[in-house]
Image (cartoon, rainbow, N blue to C red; front, side, top):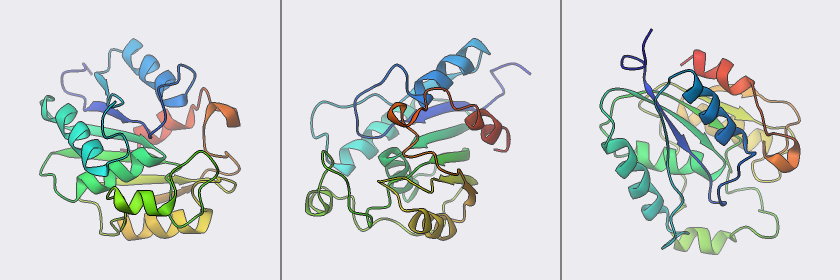
Length: 189
């Protein structure tokens, strides 16, 4: 099958700066070697905390893509995707939402506080069914997304829930670099 008829993969990172050894970066590299079309939503410099700026940034990327897309989001990127999904008419084949923040679990030091998130439009978090198939991967020891809260979000979004086990926040600090499970899950979309 050639890449012209396969959905374009759109990587939606969280709010942190780009990391070379992050599983999303490594996934994009592997998919490109397989001749897949991959776009990574770039980080923004201005209005970094504004949810609306992040949504507009995602829309800017997908508006330049012809044909169906599959979204691969992590952490706050999952929330960007869910907010964006509420207003898009875009053809989306599916979404992999890995280790989403739940915004009910108190965030560790270094992350925005609940008031800042509310002021910047992140809450309330949409709980409507997503207009496309999706898979949510929850972690049993994620400091940013409580396992049961993430399971409830998956149910509200109409997503298939996958118990990722003890994968922390699925970041390089937790040993994820390479995360082969992502490619397996993409095959299901």
